[in-house]
Length: 120
Image (cartoon, rainbow, N blue to C red):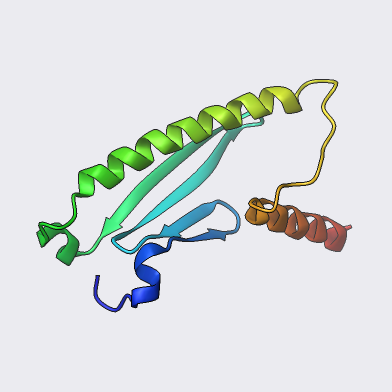
């Protein structure tokens, strides 16, 4: 895609936009998710890809490969999240710190807690 510098050709950037959007910027496309609660224990997730016209015209990229890869990966992640929620609902559940790779979740928790304190 035009304007992407050499250093960024092998990187993916992840962003979260409060309250319900996740964005991942890849060299060839942008993927975004929105998460919508539909109950206290259920949500609906929508995800889409944005490809530039140049990527579609190029013989170098296969958009279906990216879509199929992330469709599978997302479904695996959601399954793990569902299993995690079963554990959280257990009486034996005890919260613990996030790993260093979960900085977005930790930042969300800190923001949410600060908003709760501010509204109290």
